[in-house]
Amino acid sequence: MNGNEYVRTEVSGAVATVTIDRQAKLNALNPEVIAEIDAAFAGLRDDADVRAAILTGAGDKAFVAGADIGVLADMGTITGTEVSRAGQDVLRRIERFPKPVIAAVGGYALGGGCELALACHLRIASARARFGLPEVGLGIIPGYGGTVRLARLVGLGRAAELILTGDMIDGARAAEIGLANMVVPHAELTDRARKVAGRIAGNAPVAVRMALASLYGAVENTMDHALSFEATLFGLLASTDDMKEGMAAFLEKRKAVFRGA
Ligand code: COA
Image (cartoon, rainbow, N blue to C red; front, side, top):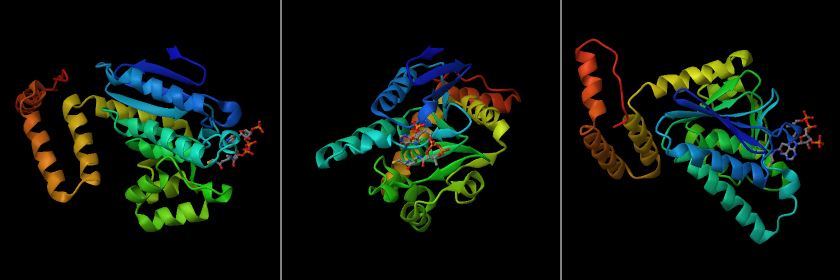
């Protein structure tokens, strides 16, 4: 186990778990926590043994209850923009992490915490999860990509409802609107996140990485550009040993053994 003050990383098999642990403040994101999350993912990026990651919050109350309001309270015009850009950059690096990242949300995912979950590739909620973007009640707006990613994920109308009211929704409602991929009983959250991560980790790693690149390329580009990008990635995968192995294993009725090349 690697650790620093607020974020610890554990690797079990091919799955890394990054846990934010600042329970006295419901895992709220101060600059140190954000830097430690960034460092945790940087440390896993080139570890070929890690094929998927889970991001979660310590304790039974919160995933992350938001950016640290005590820190935000001191912002001015310039520092506010810097705070937003700095947080956006870290979350963008998680979104561009080359292996799937699953947010396991078992409590409050508010403000920056909800935005952090949105930057992950999948979200698994427990029945105790509470998602919300309460920023307008504090005189600000979501500034870590929330207005951008939520609209893309759940549609403009639902995003507007959540962001303009600031209301919280539970895990079941989050799953209903596509904000969470699934909702599970609280006691099963860790197991389920590990199971999903394990399923992903069992697939061909380069193909999984290219699938992520193509999916996000599709959302961020025009149709023609996205289709051409998909075809290029498809062609690249045809040169991998894992493609040969995956297809040979199917034809030979055995389980494929992928090497990530
Ligand atoms: N920033 C800083 N501190 C926070 C925080 C945040 N986003 N969220 C919670 N905390 C702190 C509280 O101030 C409190 O600290 P204290 O014990 O030193 O006073 C501690 O975490 C526990 O929170 P508390 O409010 O006592 O828990 P609760 O169960 O009564 O309420 C919440 C839980 C999540 C409803 C409430 O903490 C809350 O509304 N938090 C702010 C959420 C928010 O607006 N986030 C978006 C920020 S942009």
